[in-house]
Image (cartoon, rainbow over the protein chains, first blue to last red):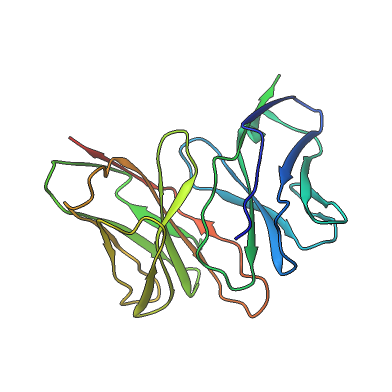
Length: 110
Length: 115
């Protein structure tokens, strides 16, 4: 799997958009970008994934650069419940040997 | 409701004892996984199974064993050979697709402490 690089931590004001960057400069053509989040002492939760087009769902938007070397997860209106560790990972189709790095600890402040 | 159930939530063990962590899913998923998480760190893959009666080692399989006799169950045994077993253990499952691999669904975890 391609490696990813994320900032260790970031703060965000409640009600504002949170933009979480992820660098995956060695990503290959058949690798997807996935985002998960983990609220303290719980299991991670899937957020969104994409290949090369931007994606949006009820939780977030995923913006992938044209060269696919980086991406940004956008939480449009952060709430205190969005405080969590966010993981960006890349994986090939049918790749099951998957691990998660340290992620970005996002703290949403009132 | 469909989901993944891990038990026990908290477990204490004396050094030298084997312990088994349970993971059951009713999502009808083919693939199941076990991860270990240490404080302030990410998730490291211990074992995974794509189908009943088959499983593969992940990145840190030493000192652990698994079985997959039923589709819905994937128990993990932490053996006495695991030198530093105190950690948070997470079980996950996913469907198997011909296209992009399905998202992982995680249980709530089991916290093992060796006394």
